[in-house]
Length: 275
Ligand code: ATR
Image (cartoon, helix red, strand yellow):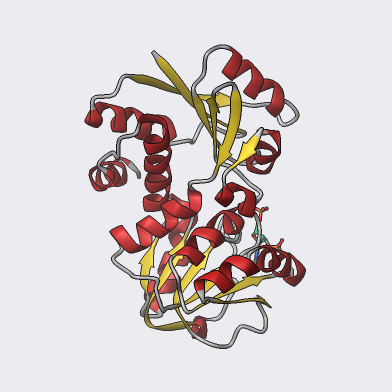
């Protein structure tokens, strides 16, 4: 049987084994997908041991996404731009790193939430791994502009600098800004900061939302609740990151199995399973 897994620390909470098992069931594929708790200093050892035991591919989650990109023999363009990877695949003896997070986000926004990004003004909050994975695929959707807003401005500037060529190619205005100086309003606001995790407030004022804007938090479950409430209170279309989670998994499943799983069905089922 083909073996896959997700690696991270912590990993107990991961929904990926359930999602991939359901994808396999619904598409008639035979595979096993497990989860591995990786010691903080043991990522390379764990990856080598997984693939030498016959593993076909693995998903990578916090805090190993950056290390995964440096460990691989080859990075896809989107993983190289993100400098982070959420999927490692062994092919012809080589370890390939890709990043399906941003594509998952864009597919969820456009396909499931029904919001086209082309020609829109987007505010991406954060400049860590989550924002880095999203920026390339967001640019490929050709919005009119993307503003990367971050508490630490130089991190946003570095992220923007890495994506300047792609932005020019797509005809998208790309800029970096500090959170304090955000005064204009946007069609789409994406929260890729970790502010919700600590139960913190949304790090930007509500004037950043145009009426009816899409306000998207990459978190889901209880971590996203404060942000979703804030968005609804200010007249936005509020959405959590559960669809992104299922879509990034679907993109990984496509890469590994060559079959597109029924994302909407699995997303509906998963939403019903969560408290
Ligand atoms: P991840 O991989 O989840 O993106 P990360 O790389 O540690 O995690 O990045 C966390 C992001 O959340 C950063 O953009 C961070 O801002 P700084 O670069 O200024 O540290 C942002 N962040 C974390 N807590 C925040 C808060 N309370 N308010 C605003 N931004 C916050």
